[in-house]
Length: 219
Ligand SMILES: N[C@@H](CCC(=O)N[C@@H](CS)C(=O)NCC(=O)O)C(=O)O
Image 1 (tube, rainbow, N blue to C red):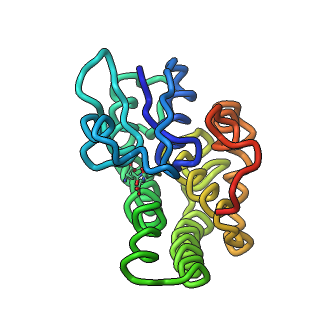
Image 2 (cartoon, rainbow, N blue to C red):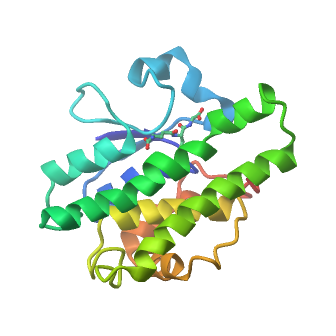
């Protein structure tokens, strides 16, 4: 498998972590988003949306969108399972995952930040306010579920890692990139801590990737 991604891409992080959890070997190809390499004709031929990740398996057409890739990996490599067995549990895990993947993360990606800057003429403090607001909203939504619902355990759903934990971890990593306070989400942070004790989460971390800079930018 070939994973086209970038060290600081949260969507790539989700796929990288699932691959690591399932013990699937992968070759990583770096698409430098800070240099706009997602817009080259060569990469667009792989992913016309000009975003990472894209996962190429056996030279077939690339898989795209992290959530679709996670579901594909779950179906093709069911062990260890990253979804609970019962339909209600699966719906809850997917719901928690979508708070991040569908609602939180899309508002802070480079093309949105670029649009705010170049088309909407928002200065850096205004852009940072936007990033912090939507990141906090996602963390608050996760916290509201996780702190109250009986299904929450050591991890987001019970005591085994699920797709919800992978997505939660990506959202917290985003908060760290953007210097967003996380103290309002203690349950989220407890679960993040439990995830980061697992080797697959830890070694997939953005700053541990070979294409990460020695001194990372602040945001
Ligand atoms: N919903 C997509 C998000 C993909 C996405 O926006 N990826 C970001 C990096 S995390 C990207 O490539 N952005 C490039 C850009 O915004 O120009 C997924 O989960 O795969």
